[in-house]
Image 1 (tube, rainbow, N blue to C red):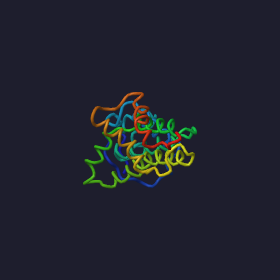
Image 2: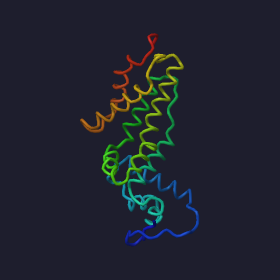
Image 3: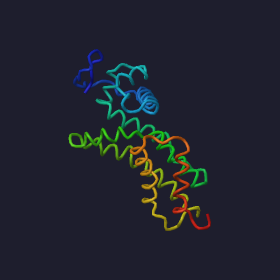
Image 4: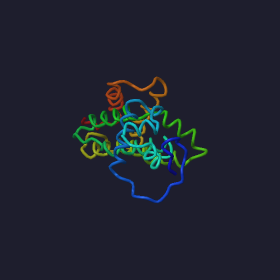
Length: 199
């Protein structure tokens, strides 16, 4: 569906030129800046259109609603941020946890859970584009630490990754988004359970 640029009403999509990848990147870059700076509630399609310098219909042609734009934006942000590899599992875990602290907005998760009954495909998309990539970043760092001998050879990588990312979700729900230095404190607290004895 397209949306008329004047009144935002859905219009049938017609055949035309392929979507311009440069415009795609401009939209996602603008949406990413708004999402990181202002959060999900302020990420509206008309606002993104203004920030990207394109018509509203251009944004609506690609993303019929804010949720789908948010998911695409998160995927775009995640692709731009590979797992760190400094040679120190401790430092890398702090970096990955801080990435989650800065980028995750639980209002998105709440909205998706609310929409689950009517649009379960959105929650499934969020799992693929947001949750699983985030957990995989922790898994990658943890496995590298095991291979280097920094972390226990018998470490349950899945459980450790869930504990790290889960700590953020619980902290956010209880007290709001944590501030700087929080990530270091969490890794420091959990490190004795992860580290090889020689560490």
